[in-house]
Structure formats: C-alpha cells, structure tokens
Length: 300
Ligand code: SF4
Image (cartoon, rainbow, N blue to C red; front, side, top):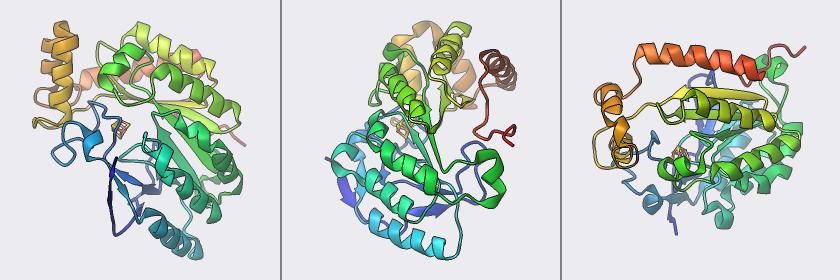
C-alpha cells in the first residue's frame, strides 16, 4: 500500500507552455511511480531502486486542486493541465484510491483542458469524464485554432514488444494491451496519440522495430506520434543509467560496449545519432501518414 503524505501545492504552473506536450500546468497526485521503468528520469536516491516501495499518495491533493483551480478559473487563467509529468496517473493504486478520477471531476467542474499521459490501460475507466472535459474545457485563446480540443490522451511506448517491455517497463501495462486501450480511446472520439519515448538504441530503434511500432500506431489511427531518444542520468544504485546498463549487461551482452560508448559519460546519444534519428523518424512518419505534433496546423 502506498504511504500517504500532505503537500503544500498540487497545481504547478509551468514557466512556459511545453512545446511538445502543450501543458501550462502539471498535476502529480502520486509521488514516485510503481511502473518502475528503468529509464525513468525521476529515478534517483529519492525513490530508490524499486520505486513501487516508495510510492506515496498526496492525501490532501483533491482539496488543494479544488482551491487552486477555483482561484485560477476566477482569474480566467485557463491552461492545459498535464496529468502527469512525474508519475503515471493510472498506477495500480489508482484502482482503489480513484484520485485521478476525482481530480478529473474537479478539472471538469472548472472547465480546464487536460492532457493525460500514461503507460496504463486503466485510463479506459475514465473515458466518460475525459470526453466531458473535451467538450466543456475552455482553451487559452492562442491555441484554440490548431488544437480545438479540450482533452488529449497520449500513450507512451518504448517498444511494442511485450518481452522487451518486461525488462525496461516492468510495472506498466504490457504494450499489446496498451495498444488495445489506445485503439479504444481513439474510437471513443478523443484526440489520441503516442509518446514514442524513449527509443532504446539497437533494441527499439532498429528499422524493423520502428516499422512494427508505426504500423501498430497507424492501425490504431492515432492523431500524432512524438518520438524521442534515450537519456540516462546518474551513477548511484537507483539511477536510470545504472539500471539500464545493468539490464543491457544481463539481457543484451553484445550491446554493452556500444551503450558504454554512448552513455558512460554524456548520458545522451551523440549528435550524429540524434540527427540521423530525427531524419529517419521524419521520413517514416511521412511514409505512415502520421503527424509529429499534437497541434494540427492544417485545421481551418
Ligand atoms: S510510467 Fe513514466 S513516471 Fe512511471 S516509471 Fe515509467 S517513465 Fe517513470
């Protein structure tokens, strides 16, 4: 069971709208994340090696959200709320706590737009509420034309191979099930897309794997795909670089020297890789007829 803790604030205003995910605000109802992805950027000594053990629920979150959104709405400070930026809104604990569902009810009441980011199929439980937000939300004026929707649902994938996901995203819904959830979400009429993050060099970034992924996303008729490369942090026992390197040593021993070359010092892929990746993704997305932005600039 997650611990409970009180926080001082729950609605965090970003300095500027995120150019990819479009959020003006972030809300994280849980602290830590039981999906325990090895590459997760929130890893580190704060949460330890097994993040599910340090998971806590912010017990006063809903009360704070009600107050903070009411104040922002009175001032007309509408903006897109990302749920969530530093945890998943649909953790296993959410089945019992229902904090995300209650937060969505408050978001609907104050008519804020929302962007759900998840690696779980539990989002299906709340499609009714997300659809209601989609219709009722008040969008910031400057984004109304290219967005014109009050709710966005993004599913994150580092792979569509269930066996690979068991290694790198052990607690998340298996990709095969996540794809079905994504398809249902899209069929429900919501603006639905993919955060293809992070692509694992020589594992999920191969031409074969990218084609499998994009073909699966195309079959779900997603509205957009946001691809990104892998970045690793830290060298402590619970840091993402340590855990990913250990997994590579165990499951992909042939890749150890290549991963060391890329990530031992810099933590991110070299420039030439990034450029080649960007070009490859641009070509592949065009070939599959998929857009690389949530915003649709062709909307009149
Ligand atoms: S689902 Fe997201 S927040 Fe949770 S462990 Fe994975 S990458 Fe981190």
